[in-house]
Each structure stands twice: as C-alpha cells, then as structure tokens.
Length: 149
Image (cartoon, rainbow, N blue to C red; front, side, top):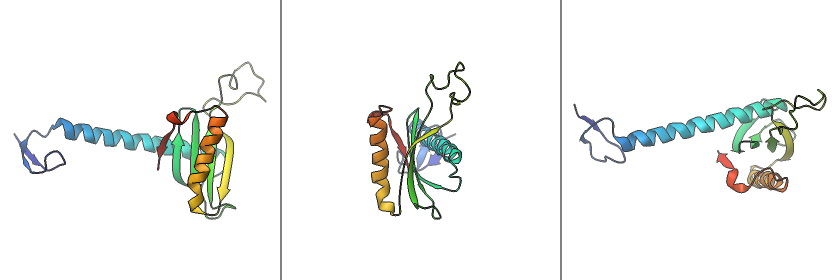
C-alpha cells in the first residue's frame, strides 16, 4: 500500500513506498552523527569529572582516538571559560610490570594542558593553542581531529 510523505527528496507528496532509500539513509546518518556526538560528550564529561570539573558546561569537544580537547564554561570558577587537553596513557605507561606508583590506568584520561580566560571570544584561540600543543607533542596531526559543538 503506498504512503504519502513530504521530504527533501519528495517535495510534492505522492504515492511511494515508505521505505525510500534516500530518506532512510539520511535518517541513519543523522542518528549516527548524534550518537557519536553524545559519546564524545560523555567521554568529555568523564574526563572533566576526573579533574574535579563536575559542574562545567561543555561548549565544544574536539577528539581523536587518544586525545581530547574540551572547552568549558564555569561561571563560578577563577576563569569563566577554559580549555582542557587530555590524552590516554600509552601501552608502556599501563604495563602491568611497572610498579604501582608508576603504572597508569588504561583508558583513564590524563590532563596535559589547560588554558583559561574571562572572555568567551578567546575560546577558539585557546582551542587552537590546545591543538598546537598536541601537534608539538606529536600526539596528533590535524587531520585526526573531529570536532563537535
């Protein structure tokens, strides 16, 4: 039985199967993007919790598989706007052969750089400085970074 629907691909409602491949693909892409952004925000929230920033509002997350740049707003903090840069520990740093005092937990984000300011307009520059720091440390190249607002 044909159904009527109006969408970008079908601006005039008309009979077609409800299983329009183009519409179905577009909805799948939107859902996948939303799930990826939610996962990045959850990861960012976990990293911020580790450093005690539990009330920070996340403005932007930029991530790779092993690094994370998180821009935040905290109205009651010393700097209202901040950028925190994290990395995951390497295999050498999580080696079970290391003594407990030197071994890091696999999958636990490590804070490696921070910046802060009182002006929202400086956030993009702070994020860029965080990217530069990761590049200088050879932890990323810019093609790896994925940004979510």
